[in-house]
Image (cartoon, rainbow, N blue to C red; front, side):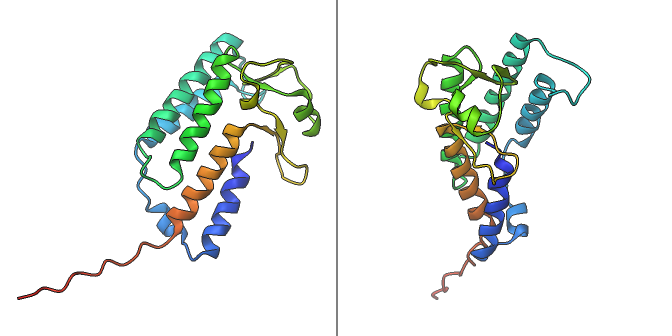
Length: 184
């Protein structure tokens, strides 16, 4: 699932409920260096034909799992943020499916066909006829009218809900603190 679409919708929803980008920007997020390291590892693991190297599948899987662990560590440091428990639950759901299926996220053939994609293995996904924990795998396609659509899992849905809630909540202006009257 492309979470960029979720971010854009959340930003619009945040503005509609009176939120501001400045308030979002001021939201303290702990461990961002872990997220940047995770993204860097994923770029190294899956250069996707854009960068001038390839990566052996076993190495790419190991780097991807390490990147997921880094993201999980960052998310766990931020569970106080509204929506983060959904993101953590989604990432854990995806990780369980991935680990149960040898380090790659299984995808249903029907989801690939609905997303107008065709592959047996691509980056961190693999088409498997009978995956372990089938309820957790990439099983649905993003509708064609959504740009950059792909396939997604229940974990991806949870992540999207959490990201949406976190952005909208973080954009809402903080309530003014009213000092208690001093009795004296």
